[in-house]
Length: 133
Image (cartoon, rainbow, N blue to C red; front, side, top):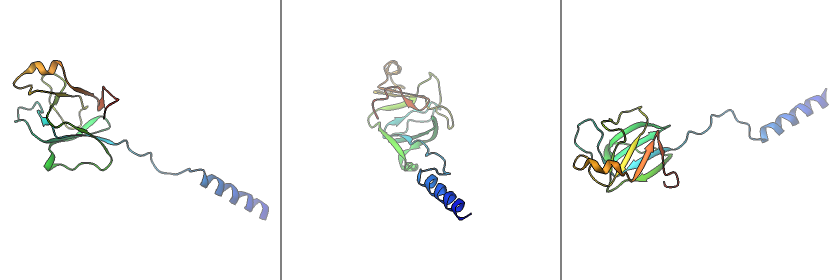
């Protein structure tokens, strides 16, 4: 009986050392767009020095950077000097909605033509030019 116990204990130790854990996989990092002027499509005035947080492809926070917390696990995109707007014409930035955004060089409220040539495009929380951060 002692040999069976030793064998079972050895097997348990071997399996334990293989890295099997009962923990959930780590959540993917949040995407943070920081510093740009946010035009959210609601009719409110543009928000300079904004912060937008995207988790799992959805918008979870948006507003003035000074009023929001940046998640610890994140990938930042500096948008200083550009405008951020929903990519759908007439669209509104809504919490829980897919993060479909344009980063544009000019104010689309003053010149809607800038929407025709965005600097960057985010679709469902993923940058379409994936080689940039």
